[in-house]
Amino acid sequence: MSDKAKATIESGNAILGIEFGSTRIKAVLIDENNNPIAQGSHQWENQLVDGLWTYSLEAVWAGVQDCYRDLRENVLSLYGVEIERLAAIGISAMMHGYMPFDKEGNLLVPFRTWRNTNTGKAAAALSELFVYNIPLRWSISHLYQAVLDHEPHVKDVDFLTTLAGYIHWRLTGEKVLGIGDASGMLPVDPATKNFSSDMVEKFDNLVKPEGFSWTLSEILPKVLTAGTRAGVLTPVGATLLDTSGHLQAGVPLCPPEGDAGTGMVATNAVEQRTGNVSAGTSSFSMIVIEKELSRPYEEIDMVTTPDGSLVAMVHCNNCTSDLNAWVNLFREYNELLGLPVDMNEIYSKLYNCALGGDSDCGGLVSYNFFSGEPVVGFAEGSPLLVRSVADRFNLANIMRAHLHASVAVLKIGNDILFDKEDVKVDRITGHGGLFKTPVVGQRILAAALNSPISVMETAGEGGAWGMALLGAFMARGGMASLPEWLNDVVFRGNDGTEIAPTPEDVAGFNAYIKNYLRRLPVERAAVETN
Image (cartoon, rainbow, N blue to C red; front, side, top):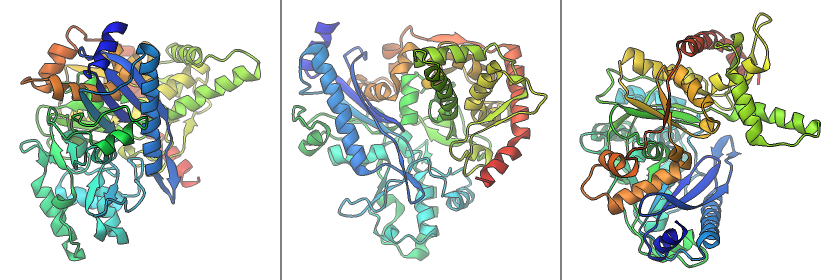
């Protein structure tokens, strides 16, 4: 394996995928068989500046350069060679948000991430105008909110893109975006594989009285589907990525994509009637549907796969952050007693302890809202554990309540799809930190969605691997469709490990959700008194 991987790197046949997650930038290098052969990473955190969540451009470039340096060192330590040439590169990042640039390429305001919920007026107005659910975090909501707030920079906008689109632009000079990421800026038309011309026209008419010199179609990136060549790495781009100077320019890049799209690819969930759930700092489910929903729902976002199929997305701002905070209490307790601390062991024991709790968590309810949660109508959050004296208060039920909370809002959104829209799904695959401890996260999610949940070993490679696969599909996919290529080449014979829900777990989760919805006013009071 080592000699073969070394030869792949030396011959320039390796493919690189880089993904900018909310807390980590990760790079994965894959071989001709799409197996990871090296990786690098960089930890980073968003900043709250003037009331808005952001990452500075300095942090973006320092982060990706450190991530690539870590990858390069990993390759040197494993194989003793430098990365000089690559067969393809793919860039992925958190979707949505707001990155407006002027004619000189200057960022007009600090990058506003998906986490911001200041766009309520704009999202509501656009949802009504388009007769389509427009979430708070979408780029068009941010743009129109800036218009409503009379921000002076809006008149100078020359290009509007996402984080992945920005990085790709700087590396290649191309103002393009993969269709999956584009569908989180503004709705796309599945028939044309482009931004909805009807909605573009409606928006232009809406802001016409402002007298801007631009139209929406002029400032948006060009939309591309998976498999399309999306430019090449320029000499400047090569230097931006690899400060050591070893990486050569001329590498083809595939369309930049959002983290939702790379998650679908990494879990082989781009075919209709398949789906995946990503559960980490935030969570989202992606169900690839066969037809449009009967009507818009505030709880459900309509996006697309990287090849343009319609996807019903339920996005939750919060997932494991509060759960992790509680687990850290037990780390502190171990340290207080002078006991060895092994976080993997702590997680494993606490997660498995939860399975011994009552299926309804003994009446305990946890709200994991570190930030707002639009699906249930919260612009802000306040983590909260709610119990009454009659509830069964013990460690197993506390941990189970936190695990249920991590996917509770996800369940609320998906119940609409399955119960009201009769959406059919043949396979749902889970990936992300919630599933790192075997069985537990799968069993909890299976109960929440009342559906079998599969987890693949490869899903642990995450979105960076999914992005590398999209690079490989562009370079090696030939005439196959993306679902065909994934099924026949990448995942052939690998369906993962499946866990089906038990009637007791499903009934318990339904009882938990009933308590969860009933006690939401307590969470609202906590937010209002913060």
